[in-house]
Image (tube, rainbow, N blue to C red; front, side):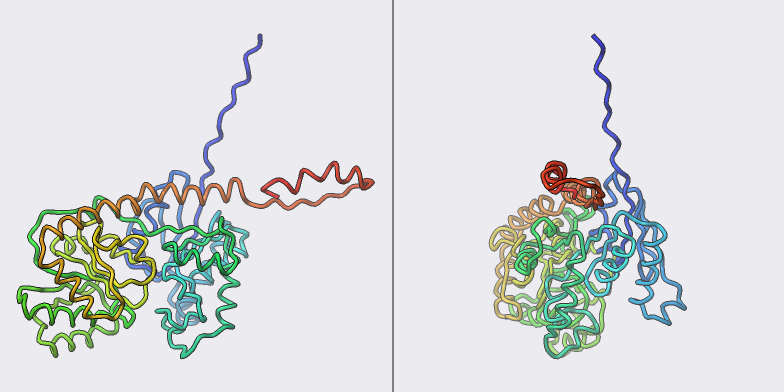
Length: 412
């Protein structure tokens, strides 16, 4: 009897990705590491305003200065992204935040017939009302919602193969607007487990926060809370990690409240993990959020968190398990939650242990890599639509017999 012919499974297709984004080094690692860890990913070309930190498979293309002067940062990145897409024909074009990067990715992806992935980092406010409540420097100046801009932005969203949201709330909003469930996936940014982990070191700060110093972050609420807490707890100190246009105003507010020596403004730091290790509680008083990467990193570092109940925070933060939620802008509630934790070391440690476990379970690199594998490979290898052109002379019965099976194929 002849031996059965040997068959072998073809190796996974090696994918080339084009990415357009503006992120700091900490954010870039959080969002890109699960993708770069995939053996199926051959290379990632990043179009950005400045060179990215060195990461395997990643190369950065920075638009020429003359092009940026002529077209602005967004326009220059669009031209470069479009040129690279047409030249290299990547399998996927990825954009993080809708304006301008998600739109740029949609344009470049459609032009090069690549798959398109848009990551909605900032939640539904990136497109609701035309972005009038977003932290975009231009759209945030709108005085009222713009239905026309919202419709335009959602048209671009519909051009994307897959939309990744930071949590379940934004995913529901997209489904309610008519996007197919298979095209919307809720995935947070990843946490670097070796970098962000509980450490037994002396605690220099009672409180720590990390984020841009812009109005929607409500950092002034934290400064107010420090002033109130120090009435009975003069040892309370806070570290504020981040930079932005409100830095001078916030420092002046700390002086007005007499806590300038208790609040350290430390600017943007790439070694944020060292400050988490030296702090007792992480605070996020934002008015709006998608899902804060800084909060997830803090949880992984073993810090209980006190965060405003906005965006996708409820997907991870559970009152009394790993931290506390409070209504955004309610400083009384913020002070109450912080006092509860600062006065009870055993409670802080218990919530911190649970938070570290939750962060790794939800946002570990290995888990998220598997999710991105399902998106990137299945879409390219098994779901890309096949367009069929047929020329034939059949009677109606013959036509049905021969063509009926074809529309039932998922690829057609």
